[in-house]
Image (cartoon, rainbow, N blue to C red):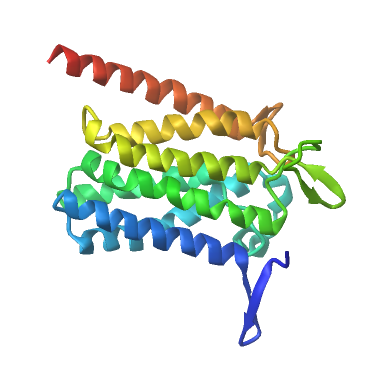
Length: 244
């Protein structure tokens, strides 16, 4: 599939950007719908999106560049060119959550309440955005004989983008279902981090283009740390709730 969807005034509009934009729009609509139930205004969600999304994109790109420094070193224009791909979701989530915290603090909104509102939206956006990797022929796995393998450069490989996208859609559905059953504010954000990281740890092991820290895959290390840290916090908070 051609990565370029169409041209507008001589500028190539790529499917990668279209899919990311679609993910942001649908995620925002979901957050607005959920915010109404929590008595949070639509304007606050839109304000948060306008601030957090650009910073998250910068964070995703910065993370990718840092862990792929040998490729980008000395070429600033290549560093900022995201049209060819190269966004790391871990960097985007870290930056987005940080911005969200300060946004809530400034506007006197309970951070954990807002976190639970947007958690399903975050992973919904990820589920849609992963299809941009398919069109860019990136973020795929190694060779496979499985019937659902896809052809890349004449080789049948694991469609890791598909594995992650399907998992993310399921996690989104689970979070929406679990919302009325949660034990404390912020639990959805913790569950999002843990569930996404579990799948990412195993899926990353299939990929052929992983960012590395020495001999280790960066995404696997980050996922493992996330599972341990958030799992511990979740256990402690749930235990404390039972005591209460």
